Length: 101
Image (cartoon, rainbow, N blue to C red; front, side, top):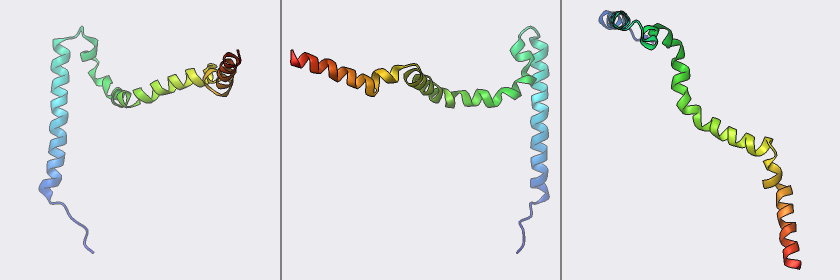
């Protein structure tokens, strides 16, 4: 069985595209940092690479966290007694007393 072999041009193309991308980013960072030294967000663009994962996942985890917050309020802060079995028992007792009057 023969393994596939990439041609030299394709291997070189990946290297060239990577180098050109790095050069482009270097130029953009230097131009933007010389134009606006007082804006911290643009000036510290080199540090923003470390926050790509939290920024890209905040949208995805927003709704599970909101659901968890509501669940915490209901279960952990005593609302389970109101909407759970004790609350149902209390509601049925009140209804039974009203019916018996």
